[in-house]
Length: 152
Image: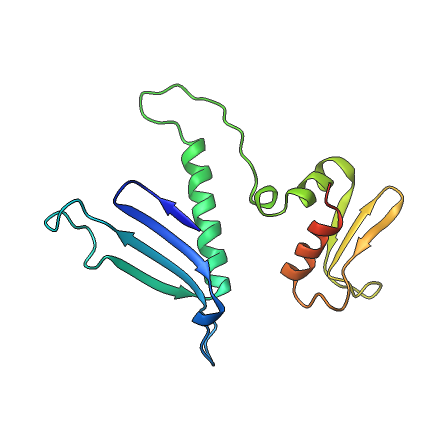
């Protein structure tokens, strides 16, 4: 994904299996690219600066950016009247079907216990609608599968 801030600065974020190196988990590239209007008008030392992030680091960065955006939207600008803006939760952005299910249809249970070894269970008043299987090794895998299973 490329996000252009203006004609001169852009961010590029992507995963490429070719960025994987044995023994390292950082395979998500975050790059800042600059195309200055003239050589004298540079913000960066190079045309591109990039770093590799682990999946956990990328998720933390995404959550920090999301939270900063929500804080910015909810904080009144000096001299402006307060304006109510809808705030969409991080869950709704990442998992719109799950968010819809929780708001309109039923509920979601997370975690294993003595009665269920599944990571995620989707329920409504009639009982179990879907549950993750042993194939879903992580909570993220199970949530991704639930998102597809209950697609509206």
